[in-house]
Image (cartoon, rainbow, N blue to C red; front, side, top):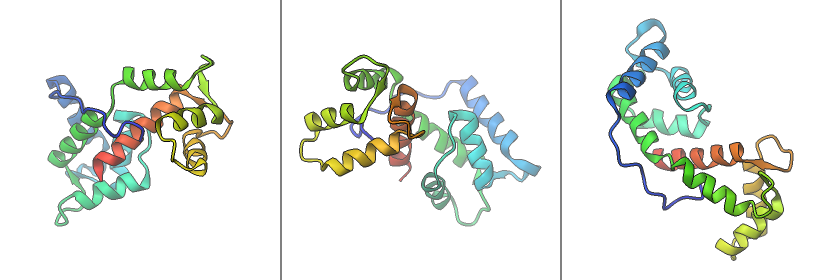
Length: 164
């Protein structure tokens, strides 16, 4: 979302991480079909990343798989998960950006914080767009964006950009 130029992680999955991904695949493969259906994939993403993928993300993944299969095969799943892991910005970078937006050190962001930040980094961006972004990131609509909301938005934006 905000880190379109963020550098991807440069790493290989450790053997234990790779093993975990295979175990999640097997656990989510209901009825041992040998592939993950749409719903199975959603459960796997929740298990590995802690969020339910959007319809757009799932549609993107499902459209990228081999049309001759009924779902996501293990090798495809491992490749998708590796790409998602690589695309996630470092948590420290997200914290740094959040702190820069949180000019009053309150631990949350207001619409005013968003407006000030966007005026500095994207002065030509229409106010309406800033408002729409704020509303999207403020998942519980309480007028405050917590670090958790912000981190979720940053990671989801990166995930969807990487998968499309």
